[in-house]
Image 1 (tube, rainbow, N blue to C red):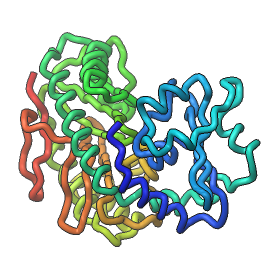
Image 2 (cartoon, one colour):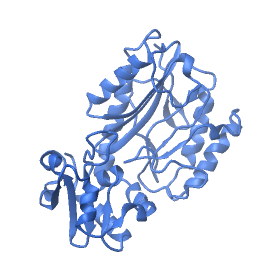
Image 3 (cartoon, one colour):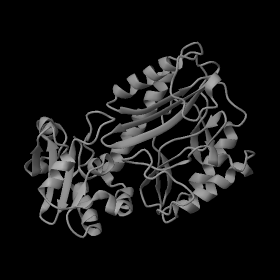
Length: 343
């Protein structure tokens, strides 16, 4: 487990500043962030196998008893081993923590807690860079074995295998062949890929999530226009900016670049990322501030076109994390941006 004691101490300080008494962390994003990127799941569809009570006298980690030995041996920082309370498997850890004493629910401080984890710490940034490279390499490797006559499900299997080989949990895999490009969230089917196809992954490792979209096959005349929309989002995403202002700048570009002015209403546009796929999903009413070392995954999209990468934003600019030099790119607004990879 690559956790950092120094980062953990800073997280403890951040949480101490936002709580007024004992606080119970129960969500995957909060638990994994606070405990330095632990795998907080067994089933990707299930609740966390741990909950954390944060109090003045330290942290108490409530863990399902049948998972405790593995978590202590493979996931937790050494200093956390003596802070573990084993909860019988038939009682969810969060319920065991509530039974042990009163504490404020995580939801009561949700905006402040989201802000507390937004500025990624040094070890987190290193883990994210490594994850981003690995996820991008997985997409390149999977794409290299695909052909127009293969099915979307075959493509999804190749993506999943490439991710898992790199210890990345596939949270989302979407594939759209030529006949299904109208769908914004195309769960893979037995349809052939055809001459142009979209591949989308959201993969988690050490709690952090990498999000990326790639195209294979032929190019589309609107590919460059959607890059210009993305550039409007990225140009506005600077530390200190408010998300509703960034959102307005990005969505205004749709009409300016030849798409319908209301195209942004047809699909979400992404937003901050990190320990949640979108943390939060940006909307015209989202007022969170962009912070230093803040991860984002904007995904502007229109019929048949989309662009998406995970980036790290700082006062020095935008760093693309989900990048593999083997994938063809074009330089756009000073950044290498992916283009369709021929079969």
